[in-house]
Image 1 (spheres, rainbow, N blue to C red):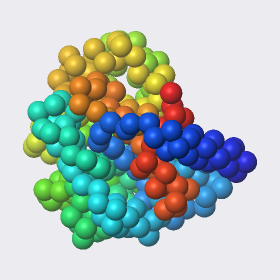
Image 2: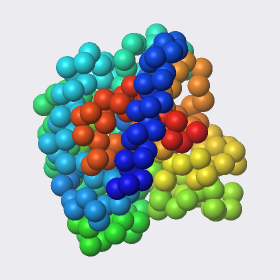
Image 3: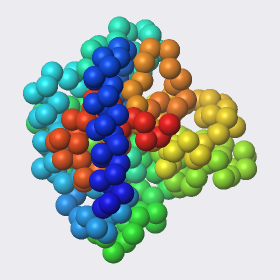
Length: 271
């Protein structure tokens, strides 16, 4: 908790200094990264992967109230490519892993507010009755989505599906051949089962050390059109499509902190 308070204090100080100096801010699109949508024991969810449903609803309402344009990931990528004008205060919503509560808890909130979202799933785990192997089972995380449940999400034009690799291993730790297999197997499995093109990848873990230039080359060879990281910041026209930044959101992001994250106060953390 002390570490979190120190992080907050430093972020607020940096943000306040930025405002005081009136440094110009270039427009860009911010992409939010959620995982599980559930009310779990906070002290045991140490990676802050869960967000209570009521807090997700509050985030969506806050974005609407403050004039943010919630766009699809396709539109966000077009802005980064420069093929679509950058919209002021543009934001997109993504979910990693594919927890069942994305369907049961997040989807009703998104549908009611007409918020487009992209879910990055791990096909090697879909259908398992057990929690994902990289989360602490005693915390209470939901099981992965079933294939039929994923089809239900995809049936709504608000929802798109991306790959999170076949088994969620850290790509940079694998030989190049295995990286290619993780990527190609996930893409082909999703496309075969869902009957739709899967164009985007989210790197497992997503921090700067979790993928390499070799990984990016594999992503391109397999045929993905963009790859998403877990690195805080906004994305501007002309930025790389192979390490698209996303702003992670967790159970600690009450509205005041969410406001600061949207303003960029925490973007320095991953530099």
